[in-house]
Image (cartoon, rainbow, N blue to C red):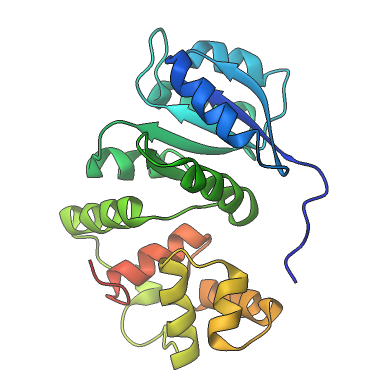
Length: 224
């Protein structure tokens, strides 16, 4: 059973386009488990807002006047490290996605994403820290290729021997499946899937889910 969220997920929308903010806010207002608690029209406005407001998730536009989203992101993480940040952009830029994920972004969506995807990204980031999609996976993959990053020593050789079930679960995680969906597919309880996910982190030397995805990319468990 997935846990029911007792209080709604508190969201702030930061975007300098009033119509875009209004559209997203209207779409999210139909969701009982989401509450838009504030709006900001630039990064500086947002940073000042979160000093007094506790948000669970922030939708943050990259291009804004006064202070853009890239500059605001580290400031947000400093003030409110547990707040999840979903970057919004008009451009699908691989190097930018990788840079923002390294700076602490929890997901990256194009502004053409429909409201259901935005809703899913908010919920997934809130519950599981990251929301991966084809955009983020491709960017992380390209970033690794460009850096030609050798696997850490702990991963070198055959130390991280994953069994078939672990590999399947890791692959499903990379396909953005939720814990419950994975549990249904592999016919295990969600709790067991979570235990295997934790074991995968230990085996692969990954601290976060993002680290696990990186491991899967490096070791060709998922292909482009």
